[in-house]
Image 1 (cartoon, one colour):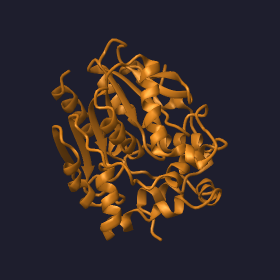
Image 2: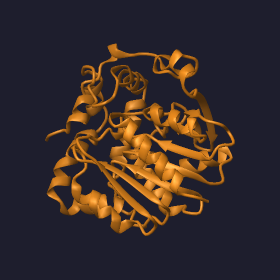
Image 3: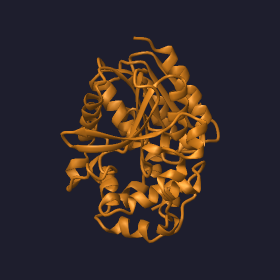
Image 4: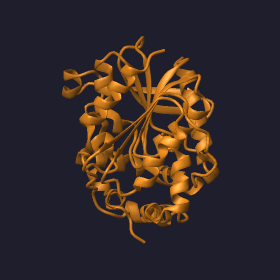
Length: 311
């Protein structure tokens, strides 16, 4: 079994590389003083209380940003600051399993349908009637479903790295390149604590484009009791089948040419699953961690997409 580099590098994480959130420029550091402030936020829902970071004026247009694995909401630090500076109200939660107060036991609690419900529960708690939705990796999977099922509430969608799940599931069934690219999931789906022990016993990461201190912060949080098992349960609970509903809202899909986890077939087939306005942007020479490795390009594309969508 081969594991793609960005996932393989995460398996080298070390507990000795821990840092505090403050060193990432959140709430009260020098970098926060030089750009829009990122504020810790707690979002109560029926499933539990989600941790999040927020930025921008409370009256601004609402944008929800969903992270992937092994990241947390701070994956979107660059985009949070830029969108806040442009007048948007932006919130990036730590998703189910990543937030300590929303970490239910049992693999079934990490099926994507639960995460989709979390999106709408968080929007309810925030008082958001309509909002723009952005997701990367697992966050993109959640966002595709949420946008398809709740088009009246989701104003626009920006999906990063992961295709529409109809296209992705088809690629897994029919494309040897995608099956090869997804072999790392077999390792993550092994029973606990097999992958957990391997990950937690390994060395520091070198995720492309991600500062070492942020990789260390991801690891510090995933080292908390039950956190890594909850994060890996997303892989154990889901096979990407059953989400064939098309997306009707204006959609931007940002992919990349060096993503070792997503084959081109699913990327290019995604257009068949969007009936609303659709734009595909493929970033040359960038890997899977697009929001951090290509932060400027991601932010520029996202801002242009949001500006193009009215209502």
